[in-house]
Amino acid sequence: HHLDVVRKLYCSTNVSKVATEWNSFRAEVLREAAFQHLFPIFENEWKQRLLTDAKEVALEELSTCAWQLASKPPLRLTSVEGEENEVIVENPRVMAAVWGQGNETPTVMVQLDERGNLVDIVSCGQLSGNIPKSGKSFMDVFSDTRKSKDVQRIKDKILEKPPHAIVVGCNNPATSQLYEDLQRICEYIFDEHARDLRENLETGAVEVRYADESVAALWENCRAAKDEFPEQKPLVRRAIALGRLQIDPLSVLAQLCGPAREVVSLRLTDLQDQLDEDEQMHVIQQVMVTAVSQVGVDLNLAANVQWRRDVLQFVPGLGPRKARHKLQ
Image 1 (cartoon, rainbow, N blue to C red):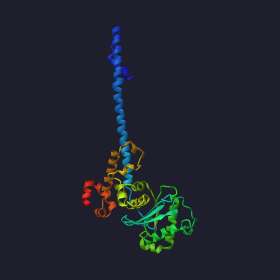
Image 2: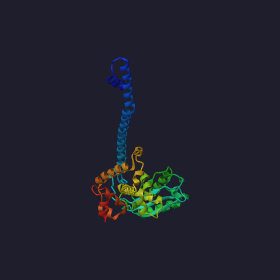
Image 3: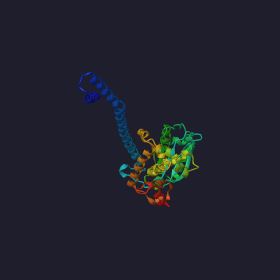
Image 4: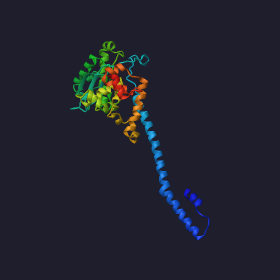
C-alpha cells in the first residue's frame, strides 16, 4: 500500500506509450529500492531496537534477582517464649547439615563458631541415602539401631557447644527425613537439658531450619573454598558455606565475585542467558556495591577473618586493588 502511494508521486499521468514504459521502469526502480535496500535497513533497525529493549528487560530482571540474593539478611532467631520477645543474636553459632547419598559421600554436618570458622566435622553414614523413618516419638531415633550411633554423636556435639541453629540443605526430597531426625534430637535435648541450653543460648533452644543450597553448592568448588579448605571434600565445603550464609551471606556471595567470576553460574533468572558474561558481572557488581554501601563493612572483622575479606572490594570507591592495600 505504501509503495503504491510513493509510486504515484514518481509516475506520470500521461498515457502515451513512452510515458507508460517510463512509468514501468520507475515502478521497477522503486520496487528494487524498497525491497532490496530500504526494507532490509528498516528490518535490521527494528531488530536492533527490539534486541536493545529485550536486553534492558533481561538486565533489569537480573538486577532484581541479584538484589534479592544480596540483600538477604543473616540468621534471625526468636526466643522460646514467642516472637513478641524476639532475641536478635549478633554472632550466632551454626551447625549445617548437607545430605549425602551414602558410601563415599555420606551426610556431613559441620559446626561453626561465632565468626564462621570451622570448629568440627561430623560424618553421618547412617543418616545418608534413603534414611529410614523411626516411629513417632523423639526417643525413637535414639533406639533405632539403624541410625542410633550417628544420632548419639550429633547429640553429644550439640551439648558440647550448643549452636543457636542447625540448618539443613534442601537439595533432595530425602532431606526431609534428615530434618525430622535433627528436630527430634533437638526436642530431646530441650526436654532433658533445658537448663544447660538456657545457660548457653540466649534463645533457650536450638532451632532447626531448612536452607537453600544453590549458593553453597557453587561455593564448594570455587577458588576461595579450595584455597581455604584444600583437603576437605566438596560436601564438607558445601556445608561450611551453608552455615556461613546464615552468618554473613554477603561475604559468601562476595567470594564468588573474584577473577573466576563463579557468581555468573548462579541461575538467578531464565533471561540471563540473553546476556554475556561481562554484562551479567557488571550488573551483579553494581548490586553488590549497593548492598555493601547499605550494610557497611567491619574493617577489623575483614582483616582478621579470611572468608569475610572479599566484601571489602565492593565498598564504594575502593575496588579490588585498594581493598587489598587496606588489608595489608
